[in-house]
Length: 169
Image (cartoon, rainbow, N blue to C red; front, top):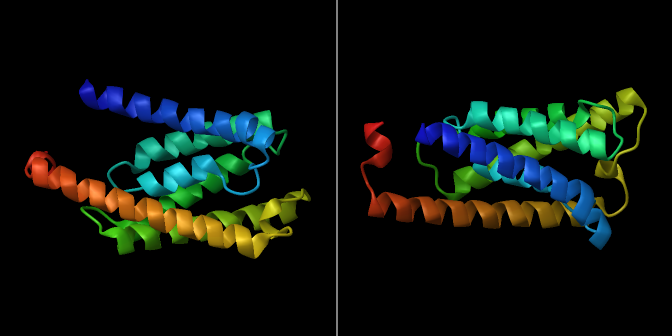
């Protein structure tokens, strides 16, 4: 029951990031700088959480598409593929900041490539290839590396405090 509550809370948090992306970030002019649901999903991606994050990616993507008048399902597919790629690269078990960063950046690249491809096939515009692309890429990669380092450090601290929690389940 406790695990179900954590999963539900995680799904709600991911949906909340989609609402922030669609409604708050455009008000402050940051909607094209980074994709908050993608960022959160990439930093949390692991084989253990993959099914929950795929459900969260789908829900966040549908919310984004509906609220921003995009082709329905495009963001859901993009976010889901990013989670699958990042989880596959990160693998199972504990990962240091380098492996977490590599997984997040690879997932980000997969999402960007799929977004460009699907936008071209659907005939809709995307900011992924618009002006400011190199700066946006540099900011996102920096944020992903920083988030991965913080996550790895936090996980190491958790294992020092409770070394048998994950190994017994």
